[in-house]
Amino acid sequence: MSRLLPRSAPRWLTDPIVGVLARGGVTPNMLTLAGVLGNAGAAALAARGDFLPAGIVMLAASSLDMLDGALARATGKATRFGSVFDAVMDRLSEAAVLFGLLFYFSDRGGREEEMLIFAALVASFLVSYTRARAEIVDVPLREGLFGRAERVLLLGAALIIGEVTVTGLTVGLWVLAVAAGVTAIQRLALVWLRVGRSGDEDG
Image (cartoon, rainbow, N blue to C red; front, side):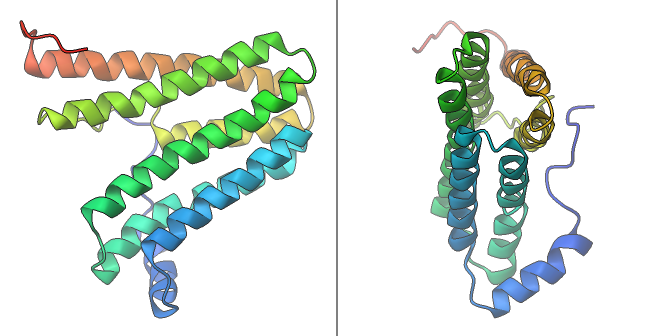
């Protein structure tokens, strides 16, 4: 199984919402920006230690990511820039919440959590970067154990659990860091298998 969750929400769920948004004049980029702002709010809550509302806000804001692409296709506003903009804002949203947690733990001597947040952030970026680089050399790459949807759900759940016990949040960060790292390696291995080793190396 290449993914734990489907890449997008089922159409019976998104189509009615997309129809309302389209009639209201909402654009895909508006949804993308709303998602970023929502995750920034979640980051601020996480930085204060308000983990339960942070988790809920993060999950709600990130759910907009299921809608912006569908809205773009439904309204004929899908563009290459919009695709890039959405991908960049997704990375920013993910980093924002992790930065909020970094702020929280750095003020409390949470060295273990600081290291895990750094590892999770780097690994998560590598997951996306590997796919981007693969597609540049015409290697389609959508597989991966822990894509963005899985990372969002895990971090959101860890935040909610963290309201009860910070240890649960720490465990969630461990899982996130390890799973994202394994996914980056998995994707790199898939590229190697599909194109074979090349004598050309480019840093």
